[in-house]
Image (cartoon, rainbow, N blue to C red):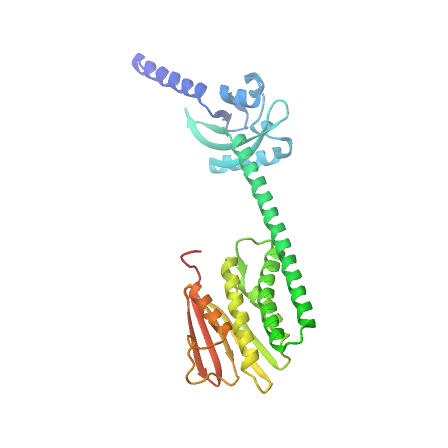
Amino acid sequence: MNDKEKKVELMFEKRYRRLFESAKDGILILNANNGMIVDVNPFLINMLGYSKEQFLTKHIWDISTSENIEYSKQMYKELQDKEYVRYEDLPLETSDGRPKHVEFVSNVYLVDNDRVIQCNIRDISERIKHEQILQDDMNKKEALIKEMQHRTKNSFGMIISLIHIRISVTHSEETKHTLEDLTLRVKAISDLYSLLYETDSFYEVQLKTYCNKIIDSMLNLSKYIEINKDLEEISVPPAKAATIGMILVELLSNIIKYAFPDSFNGMINIELKLINSRILLMVEDNGIGLRKDFDINKIKSIGLHLVNLMVNQLEGKIRFIPGNGTKIIIEFPLKNNVD
């Protein structure tokens, strides 16, 4: 090597040393054969509190927290095999025993035909601290939401009990029927809050579970009716689930009251499916069927008017198919513009 080449090499060594010494992340240089630390930059010395002399007597796993020493040895073995490792959160230990969370990136390279390991270590303690604060805040909010759901569920239960008391003392059959219809609607919303509370879910509802709750409540209205179900697992936001639940309540209530006037053994088939990002709800009965001049926009039934309004709210379509009984098909997008 001539003098010029030596000067160039010295220049590059000086630049490397300057970068090494001034880096704002920790840097370790390891012996690739045994994991001993052979060099350390000032930033890591300040971060962990060991002197340079102390660092140079340690293996890489000696600066891990005591419970992570074996893990660090495995990491070193993986590094030797793969020549590159990265860990987003690896706890190291300071000289006074405090854990220090770091992002750890290490790779193997050659220096004069010798394998050397360089470890770049970034202090992420502040990031972890802020993430924990955010997580604690989220936990508090979720606990508050859960408490609100619990109180709402209990409030609905109280409302239902008050309606039942009013039903038991009224002598008007029309008032009784009106209050019973109201109970079904309140119960459907109560079931939704019960489901949210029981499943610790705040953002989605399993329609199969929710619809089963509603159908089980409706079965108590008549001992002459059999209900067959074919329901798929579909997750939707609570607001959409509430609308679907109310639609199901109104349809089943209407069928049970009007489709089987002679109280013969009726049958209702319910399907809930997801087809090409659209939810299809089908309710079919073997009752007396619809009048030939049936028009949902001209009928006096408040229940079916509510159904029509709620289907429009879901940006869906409703079809009434006459035959041996009535088939009602409702379809709407899984995700609306407002979801």
